[in-house]
Image 1 (spheres, rainbow, N blue to C red):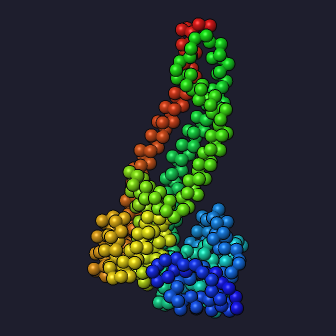
Image 2: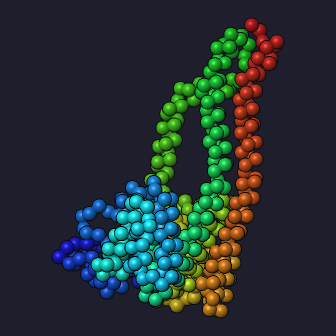
Image 3: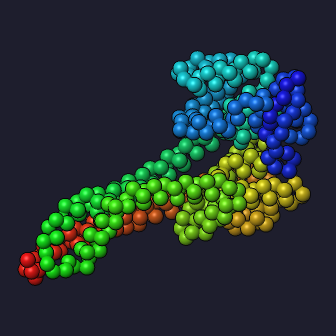
Length: 405
């Protein structure tokens, strides 16, 4: 008998961890399932935690997501063509370029040959396949529509990729402008301005206030610049570690949602992912309670995660989804209203997917408007700051006739 560490979701939607004794992983999973636990991580006790392995691979996250998207598309096409799952995985393993993911596909194929089902094989690679992904695959396997689940998954992954690409491309230019501005100011204050000090030291008269202020700032930055940099790094590290605490994360995430413009944008982006993921899973045959539990892992916002967990509990007690979401006081009236219509008409999955499309269009428009305002504002601030520094450096020279030598 061996000891196995596990992480699972119970009937209340709460994440539980523990250790179980079994002959092998298959028996361990059967024992946990008999206890009404949905297992998403299982490993021999004492081995390196999966979370550490996942953390080590986060540098390669974008490449991993591309691999998963390509894998899902290929699998969807092969299954739709009537090819059996085992043969489809073998073909994909051969087509996948020599890489770490190629080995993952082969391991999945070998696990299926060894008697595991597809969802169980995917659970062994949580760094690539999310809980929501595995949940949809499991529903497709049990319902006999795995090809349809893969097709919907590939569409969902493609939408998520486009969303991330849009966010990145929208933010690159203003971030570059901000970095260039900060670097330009630092270089001028710590390197260029000290060159003028020797000139100003020959003047008997007092320097203009702006120039004097700039010189004092330059001297301060030159003397304590390294300490300031280290202090900022320490502050960022402290904020990061503070943010990792559950209660602190909830407070900060709640505060972020209250910020004008930014809060609305963050809410729209997160709710879009939740609505699309929830709609896709329901359309793929995942039960509502399971879909709500899995959707908690789609967003990183602690407030929305908590709201989904509470909504799951209310639904379990007999509330419909619209009522459960309304009681959370987090989701917009539009989402609650449209969800209610979807439940009454029996078209909840389609309504959630339509909501996701509407929300995505809304935040794209909002982000474009913010960027149109933000970019010229940054350029203007950059010009004013650098302009003031230049004027402050040249002001004594321009007023040379009024200065006694």
